[in-house]
Length: 404
Image 1 (cartoon, rainbow, N blue to C red):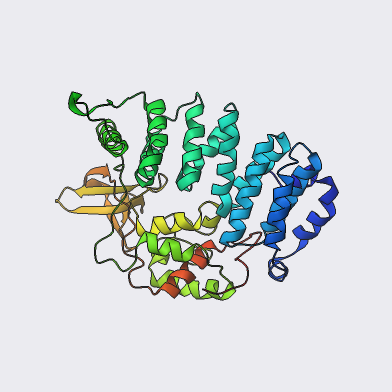
Image 2: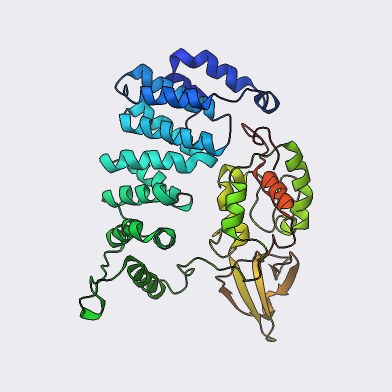
């Protein structure tokens, strides 16, 4: 992973400034002034005409580095523009910097992936970038997703892992009809399976939506034990929807007060029953102490609202049948000598003696219960997300000023 010293190597003229920025602690970083976005936007437009000049590229990197200390939709939009300009330059150091952003700045991983995809469309030869694009499939949407799909189609490499093929299908389902062909092209490339151009040998062409349904059914037959390649649905009477919450949460900036209140919400939402977060929570499920270093805010929201969207392979759910006909479902772990422990969705462990076990089979249902956000107010959801995003040893433990 690229470290600060590597960035200094790229920007020798800015080394002192970057060292000063690095030395700021989180509280000091909160006191920095907001960037002049109109001026930076105008400057980036001028630099776009000078991409062959190393000084211009270094200035673009410096602009992005400055913006990385702040968080809001307008800044994200400008960072996307700057990163795409750097990718357009095709300069090796500029591409390396974009890869650094992808690795170290989780919330802007999609913008970095967009820039890398445009570079890869022109030069589809770098296997490391191919891997970055594969990893971005869980975060890119809209234009970003279309560009990443097109870039992956340009590579000779194929992803045979069912998880990534399923994710391309899911992306395609969310794209508008005009953009779905990008997903279909990649599915044809990866699977080697083509959809007939016409329905039932008639003159009516197959729509892109129908073609995606074909790949859904093909996936179900090829991998019957895998998660279904469709977006989960919330109950009709659900208090919160993904679309509404994602739209409301996206522009918000959290502070220390949000984080402190979120500690209580973490227990109220029953997260602490299975997930450790710092010194809180039981150690039955995945450790969420630094989850924001791995997952974007919208990924956290998806995981909470749709527990069965993705399953953690390191914590598989099982169904255990005893010789007396009792069934237990949950996370399996080693119990006391001669026993197996099954932790249910309520966070309670049950020990079963090995002599009483009739069978153990994998479950395609997450042990995490659905509806965790139903009893929460919007303010509590904000505080919960703020606490989840808080890291033990971060560059920025929480976002800049402002309260939801």
